[in-house]
Image 1: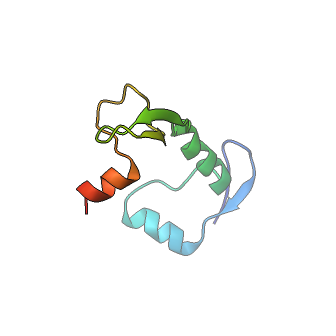
Image 2: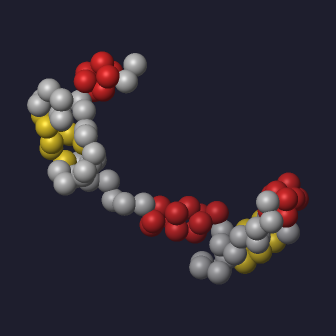
Amino acid sequence: MIKKCQSCNKEFKIIPQEEEFYKKVKINLPEFCPLCRQQRRLSFKNPRQLNKRKCDKCGAEIITTYPADFPHKIYCGKCFEENFK
């Protein structure tokens, strides 16, 4: 089956196995091409930003994607390994 993307107007193909899958899980066929779907999914992600923090156990300086005001404890690799083996 050939469909036209609602975003970029490019044609894309849905193979029979995909069509069967969508019917099986009871969801509509995609309206966007694979590239536009991927770009859309990525737009929902938070931007990756690195922050300097201190390990909440040993106080070592670490770089993490979690901001300073993140409410949960953040450990350096060594402390994480010691506590969660």
